Length: 164
Image 1 (spheres, rainbow, N blue to C red):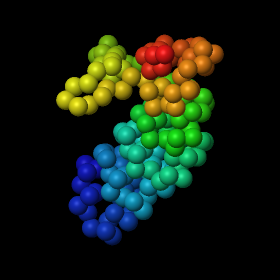
Image 2 (spheres, one colour):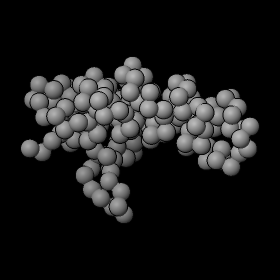
Image 3 (cartoon, helix red, strand yellow):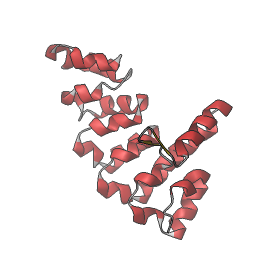
Image 4 (spheres, rainbow, N blue to C red):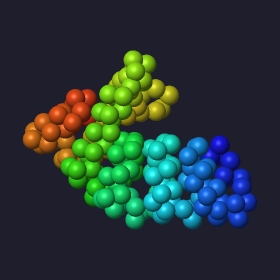
């Protein structure tokens, strides 16, 4: 389990092969600072859990090409991209596209889970994410032309659009 890396000796946390395997099985990236700038390790972590992108090096979070790869793997990574890229239409549309592919590939139970994620509700202090637009700079979701393209990519995009 990835959390176990937190308790591993420093020499083990410095072993790239071990860290790469650990991030494929849990939230290990936060416990492996030496590899938070390693693109392969970060993408492996994002594949396991998009929220792992929060532990990625700031340089990777600011690299548009890398961010496109990360949000293409998990739209949840959108929450942690650099602020300048949260307004980038390509990044937002790629994240929406990943969520749409997730929807298309899901069975009935999986679609229920996605609908649960996109609902706008707070329970036990946890805000369930609607769509990647929730993490975009507000201006990104306010332009009708952009929203038309977003809806073409993923119909649920309207759930994350600005209310005003």
